[in-house]
Length: 178
Image 1 (cartoon, one colour):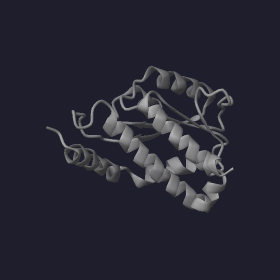
Image 2: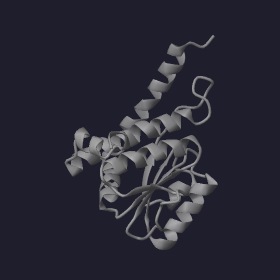
Image 3: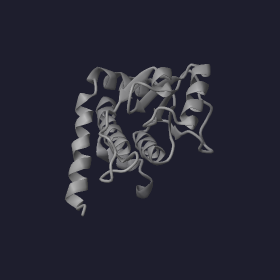
Image 4: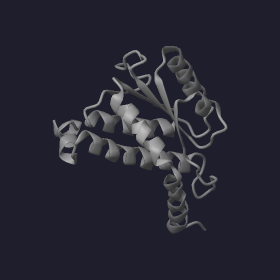
């Protein structure tokens, strides 16, 4: 019988993959985001939910951020960055977004689970989360999605520091506090 502790320990051991990320690439990703006129985020399914959480934090930092496909999203241009989240790197919707971004010369930032995929190859900046194998303790894409969430919230902290923002500044832009 599986216990909470079994699953929790398995999932938590997966986060060691974040320590393997190249800090130089992380810095370049943060700089690209801060230099962008608009930031677009895209993912499908649970990766999309994680992407929406990231876009929300970017807005709370005072950045212009949108989730691709929302009715209020403007047209992507060469002055923008697009963050694509795809564990497989082969998600059809994300591939279509990458193709559009290539056409207009927008900066593509990908987060995938390997270097052997189409989205990784199409990207300007690439973060690879080498997640453990899925199992009944963390089925399907759980490990990738959880790693993305932790990674993106960590990027938020870096971006806040770069912008000189504090939690109180974000709170002022948080919808609940209006």
